[in-house]
Amino acid sequence: MAQSVGKANYSASSARAKSRKSALIDQVRMKQLLQQDVNAISASIADSGYRADLDLYASRLKGAELVEAALSHNLDRDLAEVLHFCTGSVRDQVAIYALRFEFANAKTVLRAIHSGADHEVLRTEILPEENSSNRKWLDMATRSKTLAEAITLMGSSPWGKTLSKLPEGSSLQEMEDALDRAYYADALKSVSLPGSDFTLMRYLRSEIDHKNVINILRSIRQGIDQENIIQIMIPGGRSISKDALRAMTRETTGLGVVETLAKRSTGFDSEGLMEAIEASEGGSLDPVIQLLAKKRDALLYSMSHRSPVSVLPVVHYIESKTHEVQNLRLLVRGKAAGLSNEVIEEHMR
Image: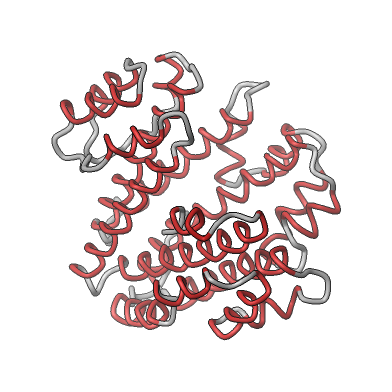
């Protein structure tokens, strides 16, 4: 990624990010929304910065579909605005952090093609054409009949280059794993450049540790052999060495993975992990995923307050905004599916 010109505006960007964060929906308000139905939630969040996005889709969507489309549109627009007020190396670092959303869109295109999603569904629900950020992705998806064709259309983009290097016939999961490795490789390289805020590197490396733990646990459940598990590990983690990762991949149970992790890694915060593993037995890995997500939230909160004039408050805002959108999306999806408030709240961040 080319470096931006201009002076890094750490103070100004941090102040603007903190101001935006103060306007986000707090936990008290989120719990109040939990008591409402989908239509009431839509009306309530309009005054929290989502009115223009809701109005944009109101002519053709309603209920949960309306709220979800508005949330995605709002997040894309907000991210563009944040990037716009950052300059110099601040913008460079925020941009590499935000690039994860582009990699996620590449995955969305691949999944849509792999599943044979209808073009009408693509342009109205999966990648609404009203959102200008979706247009290049929508064009790729509608012009491609196969994953290979989509990869060709991705061209020289970071995701296109990554996918074009994979062996012919690679599975969708192999493509997604490769995209994860490529994103973090690019991100770590970018935050290592002169003038970068190295505190961001610590957070990214902690993310890698968490993703590797989840990938090992998921792979064991899927019956994937050790060598193939090792292949999907993301290099560059902070607290789990290569040897520790290898030892963890030799385990055959989640409890064994955690025991090995505790023995082989002194810097990894494994508090509560054993209990989360036990809670996930016979079900999904959600308890583990939620626990690790909360640990990252706490780490980013702490780091952004210890380094108030840095890129971290901006990243913290982006993460907080993303969590707000995810929570609201979970609310409307859960309500539409008839889930209880207790179940919905358990999965909120």
